[in-house]
Length: 206
Image 1 (cartoon, one colour):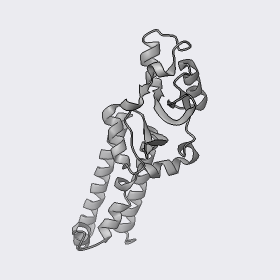
Image 2 (cartoon, rainbow, N blue to C red):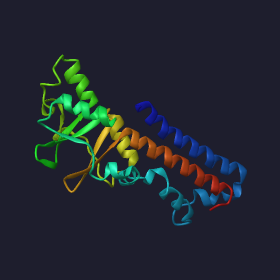
Image 3 (cartoon, rainbow, N blue to C red):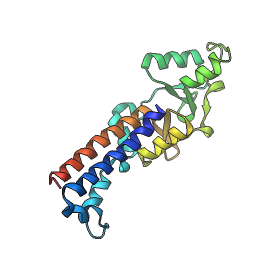
Image 4 (cartoon, rainbow, N blue to C red):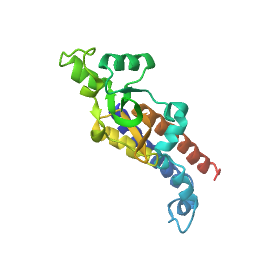
């Protein structure tokens, strides 16, 4: 998955560069309007602002709909690891938000499939007698983003820290969680739209 992320970013840049090179070859007369400064033309600025570089985590959460509006799946620090993993399996997810008992809005940490494999299976511990709070990644060690964080920045954080889920924090409270899959889908979608915009530009749509 990390290799896919890196190839998406680099591949998109290569495609964009190729299209712009095509512009220079097909119609040199339009070259100044493509490569002039912002003060000389607002046309390139509009293309850049609508590209995937400007997509934020907020945009990703909107595309996810209800699953990102605060109705995410969670467990408590007192739940057993067995129950947490059972919930992940039933809902086909790879991570659960962990909260303190009776305090659903207070983030205590996160438990993932990786935590289960490394801290239960590999160590030969019992999932039915181990509490989630004993193996979770604690809140003060979490990598987080805000709704304003750019998608490419979130992707970089996930790649650098080798994580697949990242909580979204606003005003010291958690408002959702996005996965590497959500981020990749957003980048792929924006790549397609950007190519369409560039193609429209070549055809005179701008």
